[in-house]
Length: 120
Image 1: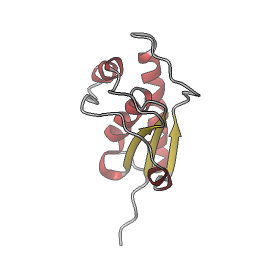
Image 2: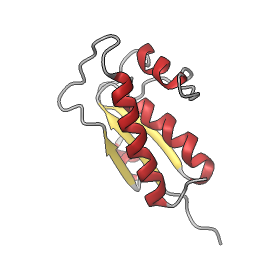
Image 3: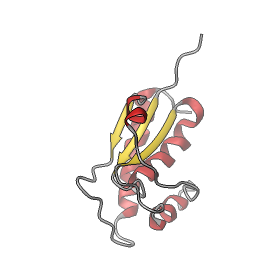
């Protein structure tokens, strides 16, 4: 009998920036040793191109992702739910602070992967 894989949901408002970056980091670090998903309460039309570019700088491709809504079923199926600190809304200012945000998200996701014991 094999152990169930841990499941993580990265949740935010638009699922277009921070949660997509966190998902990209998590998938790169945990691979298929965990299940990862992301979603938003009010999904945007597309992933923020600044977030895509910031992740591409690190060799992580999130360009194929699309914002989607989180569901109660998806949340309940998750062992860990990570909110991205967007509060009531997630403002977007082109070209501002995404790299600093990206690096902080990366540090936190690395710690989560280690805590879950699913690192490579």
